[in-house]
View 1 (cartoon, rainbow, N blue to C red):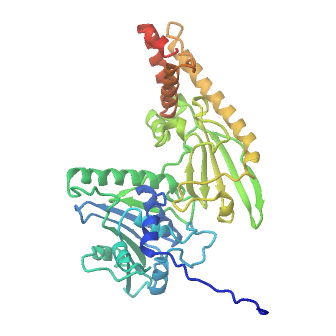
View 2 (cartoon, rainbow, N blue to C red; view 1 turned 135 degrees about the horizontal axis):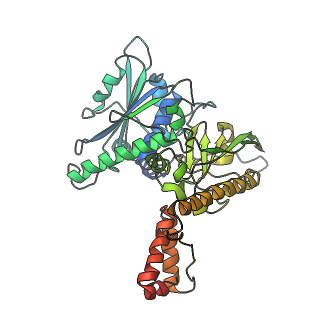
Length: 437
C-alpha cells in the first residue's frame, strides 16, 4: 500500500448511432442549414455559389456547388469528421467543425461531398456520410457513394476547374413521410427555395454587394440570382446616419473591437417609393425588424431585436443598428452552432445602452414627424389620428384586448388595429366596452 495507485482510464466513446440522431436536432431550419453550407463555400474563396433544389418525389435532392479551392482526399475525409481538427483563421465563417455535418443531417439522411482541387487535372474526390450506414455499424464512418446516389449530377459543376459540390439525398426532414411524390411535397420544395433565397440574400448581403471580400459573390437558387437585402437602405436619400462608435472589449484571453453604427430609416412618405418601403420592412415587418443587426466577420447572425436592452415599440420601428465583431470575440458572443442565436456580452451592454436610447429617441422623432405629416396632408376636415389607448388590464376581456394589441404590434399593424378599435367603439360600443376600450 506504500506506492501510489496507478490511475486508470476508461474508454467512453459515445454511441455513433445515438449521438448522430441527437445532432440532427441542433436547431437548424432549411434556410439556415443551406446558409451554413454557403459559409464553407465562402471560406474556401468561392465567388459563385449555386443552390439547386430539385423535386423528384422520394429521390428529390438539394445540391450546393461552388468554385472555391476544393479539397483533396485527406482534407475531405477530415471535413466529414464531427468536430474536425482543422484550424480556423480570422476570415473563416466556421467555428466548431460541425456545420457541414449538422446542417446537412438536420435535413437529410445522406450527405455526399464531391470536390476537385487540381486546376488542370480533373481528379475528383467523393465521400458520403450516410446515417443508415452509421446506424447499422454504430461507428463514425464515411464511405464511397452508394450505387443509387445521384452524386453524378455534381460532376458537371467541376468540369472547368476546382470547386466543391454538396449533395443532400433522402430528404426525410423536408419531404412528408406519406406521399413524398405528391403535389403538396412539390409545393413545399418550391416554398423552401423562395425562403432560402430570401434568407441567403439577408445574411450574406455584404458578400453579394461586394462590401466583404475582394469582389462580389454571385449566389443563385434554382438559376435565379439572389438579391441582397441590406437592412439599412443606403440608397435612400433621407436615411439618417448617426455617429458610429467603436468599443474595446476584453475578457480573459478574448479581446477585440465592436463597431456600432446606428441608422434611422426614412418614414414612409420620405422613402423613394412605396414598394421600396415595403421591401425594407423585412421578412418580419417593421416593428419586429427594428433593433440590432449583429455581424460576425461580415456575415449576419442576428436580424433585429434589442437583446433585452429595451422593448420593441411602434414609435421606434425605424431604428436599426449594425453591430460588427470579429472572430476573436467568438467566446464572448457565444454563437450557436447553427449561427441562429447570439448572446450580447455583459461587458458590452452598459457601453451601448445609452447610444441605443439616443437612437430610439431620434427614431421616435422621425416617426412623430411622419404622423404629423399625415395629419397635415389630410387637412382640417379629415379625421384626426387615432389616439392609442390602453385596454383595462384586470379582466379576462382586457387581457384578450392586450394580446390582440401586442400581436398587431409585432405584425407591424399597430395603426390599423387602433383604427379598427376606434370604428368598433363607434359601431358597437358595447363590444368595445366589454374589451376594456
